Amino acid sequence: MKSLSFRKDLIGVQEELLRFAYKLTSDREDANDLLQETTLKALDNEDKYMPDTNFKGWMYTIMRNIFINNYRKVLRDQTFVDQTDNLYHLNLPQDSGFDSTEGAHDLKEIRKIVNALPKEYRVPFSMHVSGFKYREIAEKLNLPLGTVKSRIFFTRQKLQEELKDFR
Image (tube, rainbow, N blue to C red):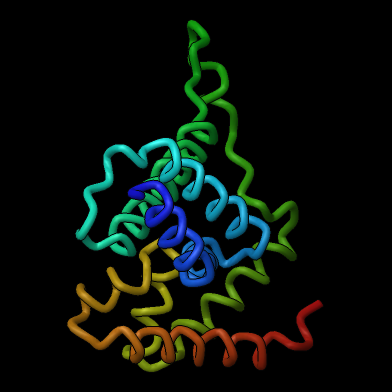
């Protein structure tokens, strides 16, 4: 009896979980992979689920934890640890991404445009480019999340407009 109810609940929550997975990954294929991994994990741990508790919440928690663990794994895999005796790799000159004085000029032009923006747009955009998440920016600047998103969006549009003749 328990197993049939569990599988019925699992099937019933698939569509919602797929939407949640897409919000987390922003990629349809990754969202489908995350949904599949979550479903398999739930089936493997069916015995740990307590009937008459929040099934949907349990599933969302499994999905969120899988997503976080996968994200951390990707970060770990991308981290390079220089194990040479003289730290040869760490002492190599770092490539700035700009191979010429023209590239450096382009970067100065971009900075000039961003710095000319009003502070309420410049600060959130600079924080976002530095790696802060929207929610972190909203908390640090004590602004609503939607305001932060719209200011960053506006700044991107402004940059695209100003740099349309760049290449």
